[in-house]
Length: 415
Ligand code: AMP
Ligand code: MG
Image (cartoon, rainbow, N blue to C red; front, side, top):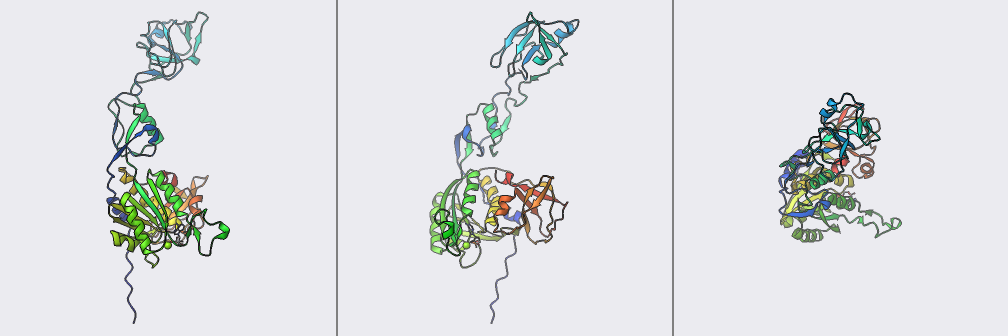
């Protein structure tokens, strides 16, 4: 007698998996006040509205002379000179410009009232009596940076949900913000499963027992979480045992928003994540139609989200970037979490189509195209180190040299 095996679950499209996952990512309650100095990478929890205009007043963008263009028109010719009536360095306000004179002015200094152009010093001769001869006729408004040309008063310069970049920190400072209200950091507990795993530093390479491998996922997952603004509790390696897995999950659920695991999400007897989570809460094990990274788990234990990544290092890495990264950003209130692929030319061929959507590790070459890492196995982490991004290849698609493909740079996914 043969027992019928359950029919394999249909694979889920990545977009559906992402939509479902993001549906669970309600923004964390709570904000934090941080110094603008320390806010790089954090997510703004308020709109920043400017109370002033930037620049605050018209100012010179050159070292030179501020003048009234009409005064030059009154001169018979440009061989005549105008006296210097005042000196305005940056940081001081000048007096109204006396008709028929010029003001010595420096970059960033306010334009005195009455002046309507700046002539750079290279275009002037200073005569023995100190007066200035302008060598080229200025255009109205030249070398003047207008008040408010960067920011107008009342403008929203940065929006709630925006992730702060170094340029954004500068912008916040330019409108006088020394403290910013940002989303609190997600608290994430991280653990790896697998009895074969050994922590670097505990066993020397030459002493590794048969079947043992170093735990690599722990290192990149921890680094990725920190880059995304998370507060990480690293719980290390949990043995492949149901009870140990349950204990780790129960303890972590108390004080964390997210529990992230790697390995043990398949359905073999040594895969304990699914039954352990189910004994404490609930969990869906998804078979996502992507390569690498098919098995992926989402569930909850008490209030904590549980995300189970596959153990194979490249699968773990890629599913983190495609699914966990947007999830963590949305928890912090970022509304637009989709990566933006770039159209690029393949300088390689990919002759075997797969029914799953593939994320190939590639590198930009010097000729405006992409090269492929030769070994695309999900265990070969070298591909992710060598590569500088992923080609998002739709199911069933072959790639020939010259084809336009969708490229997602790691620089975007790792930021
Ligand atoms: P699993 O998902 O637990 O079945 O693991 C799949 C493969 O990934 C196995 O070859 C594991 O040895 C490997 N693996 C699992 N976890 C890690 C890890 N933390 N670091 C490196 N390799 C791992
Ligand atoms: Mg395992």
